[in-house]
Length: 216
Image 1 (cartoon, one colour):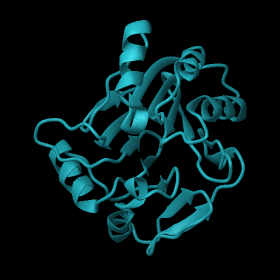
Image 2 (spheres, rainbow, N blue to C red):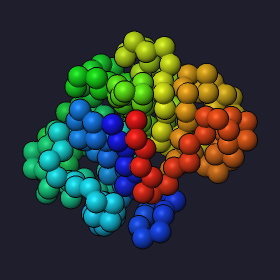
Image 3 (cartoon, helix red, strand yellow):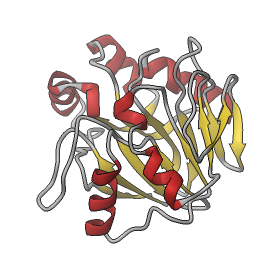
């Protein structure tokens, strides 16, 4: 199982980035979680990183904010008719939008939290290392999303939680550390959250930026 960060707010040499978030997951399925703001960013970075945006099994949109769905028109060109799991509230021309309402399994070993507050969902993936949870901006709370995914998947603890945590409180981060072995704050998590986790939970902190590849 491999996660490739195609876009984060922080970039690596040779790559480009926006304020946004996009991760390519490759394991039993190949799917894109969120699509940044511009297809050009995804196209450039996937080429540099030596991976393809074609032949996806499905895609996931955490919520309808432009820094998460702006690149999906490119994905539609490369994968016409691809199923996109998303909360209610929008469409992407060329993609088949499947509205996610309730928590449940969307593919074997892949779960959605359901649209918390009717607005945002996250997913969990069964991997050889354990349960991996990918979040977008965590507007409903990264702790709530994680709790919901642990409950629906039947896991007691996650192996990794990665994504935007939306400037979480220290209390939220402390709670999250009890639910996962590793934490990878990215996108809208904020520098304060990264510093706090790195300082107080150094064994759990995973640094993430555009171009990061995580093998699981």
